[in-house]
Image (cartoon, rainbow, N blue to C red; front, side, top):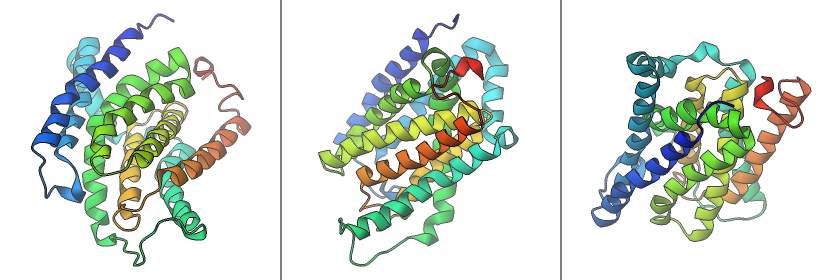
Length: 263
């Protein structure tokens, strides 16, 4: 392996460090009235965005940056199974989670309200909001780190940083148990995203779709996501991910112990 993997760890470290001012802003001078109750710290999504542009410039100058923006609509690159997984994984996981919570009498509102009128706005805003993040997590980091560590370990690394990056904003609105569950969920979601990206045609568009569907599915969960249970969602996400991996093994897309170099 000739790739200098250390620079990608620098990317992850800088993302965390450069996001600190946004945490401080959100803690000291919170802004209310943002769409879907977002905290002002959401602006930290532009940290991985600008870092990814710097990395692209260093590697291929202007052509590298142009290539990144063109990748936003690289729909045709995706294989059918990856497109289906990215579209359906999180809606199915949240739908199954709702009925699981209902069956086991877990915390749900008496009056179930699903804000379907907000769906078009959610799809547009969350897709656009996913671009700055996935320029970093997917387009810059996923392939080189997966070549070095394999998709599962890479998912744990990137997914762990991705989750920890959100911990402070989450902690403003949720108890510690919810936050821990969400950290674990983010790691498994990222593992799924990496498999779909690496083995499914390397389509950034469908990575953006997956990211979008995370937020849309959470936002549509009763009531506007206020009663999500990340532990239950994690169980169903793992189950769906397991079915995907079994399919990839059965169709010989990957080995039982996958090695990216063989793809």
